[in-house]
Image 1 (tube, one colour):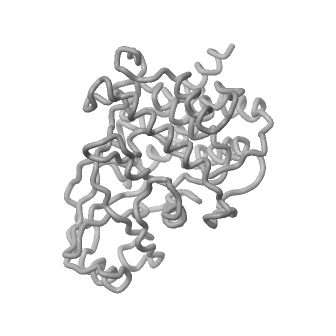
Image 2 (tube, rainbow, N blue to C red):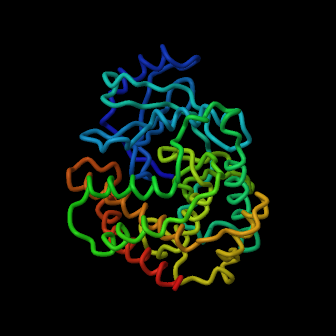
Length: 344
């Protein structure tokens, strides 16, 4: 993860506020903006008392329910009691007068983030172990008893995928800038074919991909799962399908995938092996409707990126390559349609 100099945070006001709000915090403070992340701007804080991470809402008009940093803070705080690897949540500031937006501060976890799922930085014979660590972290998350950690009210009841399709259709419409035929096809097809849902309900991350994980710098161990803005209560297969969907993306896309590459040659597990390993860890026999779940994942990511496109056009996108990312909307929608056709 790289950083760039940031000048849009009043560091003096921020330092004074944090000295009063976090035990042991002492300024002065310098900030650097992390180059990753499309939704909520994220900063490395360097203070006299150590290094921290600040995550805040973007400036400008926001879509309803988007950029929920308060939800991120709540789930991080709750998961501190579990075996799920997360950063330590220090403080949530809901007073927008401090730096202009709601924000929270968490621990800075030093480690490695892999932007390329081919894992070129990892020795060939160790790559499967890293993928296994990812799947084990996912299974650990989905096994959390939400009642025990105070998150039983963290999401709505009812069919999770029906809600997701409805939510992201609304979000897409709110951010729509032009007609995309493949998105129109999905908006019509997905609600009609949504399967009946089992009673299984767990905490889902919502953006479970390999570049949202921080690994230990020296060993195959996950230190923190990042970016909890989209977390909620729902069906756990959503995270598994989303993770596998991201691996299907083109290798040269802004969100890099493995499309067109030989996973066997790279020393990586096949998609079916990932699914089987997850099922084994959670005591599941099989997953029905896999292609539907993949298609929903493509549709959802396309809707999210449409929001990035809207912000980029409006001039308040949080990432330097927002224009390049925003061009993924139509290709993602087409990939979703292709997945459904693949199903036959």
